[in-house]
Length: 410
Image (cartoon, rainbow, N blue to C red; front, side, top):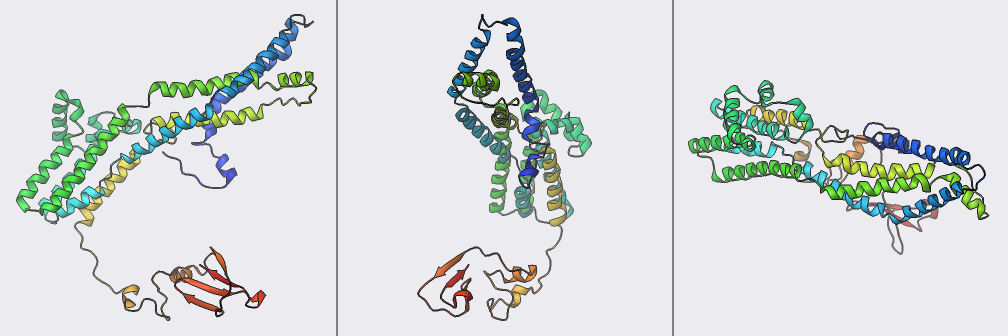
């Protein structure tokens, strides 16, 4: 499920689930292991192989490291990763916007089938179940979590969203066209609404709006399937991966501090041997973590920490749907009662009233503290009283300067 977070800098860094540290810790350990292995080769293996320095192994090694360090400056890693991740994040959010919510459709259904008699109540309940059945059938093809919840269509029968007779019809349809299984409940909805409209004579405007909303509901699934079928081109991901890991391959040699010390020492510069590659590790967290974000968001309905929780959304939609059609539609709205705003409707900004439209007096009274000072503006060359309230602003006199400065408090 998408991780919710808040807090200060340290609280954000100390989180583990969904964090950058959890994403890159394996790659970081491998990188540090290779880094110290190369350091060991330079400090121990090369002196053992060339104790007199006649073969100049260490000199060759230093030259290679310096060249590799220059190569890291030629890779436009920031540009490649920024463009790649921005496209993946945009695609991730568009997939979330493709998710359907049944409230609008069922609210229009209550206009088309408004009666509380048993027949129309069953129609509303049946349509609400079919809408959520469509979600379960479609989402199990794109979401790993829904697939684990409903490994087969038979498991949807066990959940109560599908009856035995309906299951047999779906299986018969799936033998000829597997791709139309999730569309079948929506076609049943059209047939049920057409039949009930012919019996009750619902207003054409309501029926037309319901059909348009049903069309939008169906389009959302088609768009979701399109995002699932058409992924980001493989070559695009390969370029980003190759640039990222090639950059840090060159850093394995080019960022060896002991090599830099000897090279600078020969040039007359002083340097300190940082046994731990601190700055390179920070770069590793930035760039590899950035690339991991793109990989994790490529498939937003998987099992990662930040993947969208479709199982929760399905449960939420089921509860909301049956609440609308079975409870809210069968209850009358509350009777009219005079509220505080109704009593002062003729003079809402009366001086003795605590309710003022467009003001924050009620909130100030409820919380027992003054509002924050958002802006002070100095007014010059005008005479005002000590405190005047007008049009949502208050004029205050600065007592320290004995009325010479006027401040406008918004």
